[in-house]
Amino acid sequence: MSFQHPGLLLAGLLLLAPWFLRSRAVPALSLGPAFLLESLPGGGRTRWQHLLVVAEAIALLGLVVALARPVREVALPSSVAGAEILLCLDRSSSMQAHDLDPLRTRMQLAQSAAQAFVQQRDHDRIGLIAFARYPDLLSPTTLDQAAIGTLIEEVALVEANGAEDLTGIGTAVARAAQVLSTREARSRLIVLLTDGEENVATPASPTSLKPVEAAALCRSLGIRVYPIAVGVESAGLTSLRQLAASTGGASFAAQDAAALPQVFTAIDRLEQSPLDDPRFEVQEAFLPFLLGGMALLFLVHLLRLGPMQRLP
Image (cartoon, rainbow, N blue to C red; front, side, top):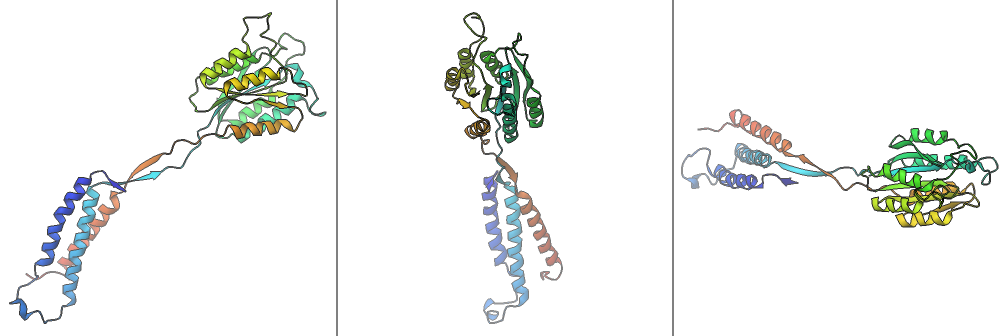
């Protein structure tokens, strides 16, 4: 506990000291020489008068303490400073392969693992981008994990061998970085899930954004990238590793059905949401001293006007 006006506390104590000494020194009634009264036993009324003086001093002390405005710092519960996460989910036609599980496609396994990851990160704002040749922002980052889970489930593959059936990793990562650049969270990351290699930014298309350029953008913004290569023969694994390493993230390869949940668990452990800085709330503490002092002072005066009244 501390005082907002400690000077008033010291001044009040200095004023109370002589008053207390004077109150104890003044006799209630002068009847003659003091030596004639020394042998007389003290009565209960005298003891009560002394107690009233002490009680009055305590009451005034309480009022002085209240006047000095005591306060205390109360620690507030720690809260989690959630991260900003963008999931980038590859929806090229190759994600329909059954090489990881004969009953489920790569996309179905990826969707299931991603949904479980979202449910675990209940303090984080999570968004979703689905991409093939072009990235589509399906949702900006939000705390509505249930809505993100539904959107993940609804991601559909593009038409095989169609105009959009390519894998634009650089463009997808850059789009995710653009969305996260407006966020102020201390932890911002991109989880990229793909089974292919960059085939949009090729020598034949020199103006397309390359993964290395997207990595430079993420690095300048302080955004980490966690690529996950899906499939037994995941192409472009080297470029994905470079993408992760240059942004401070980590790359993973999921080569069987059980590996995908384990990969998301590993990312969850690597990216624990930090706690907010310790916070305190200053609370006033003068009211108990004020009310207690006033109540005790009122009681003392009530007794002195009644059964403990002093004789003139």
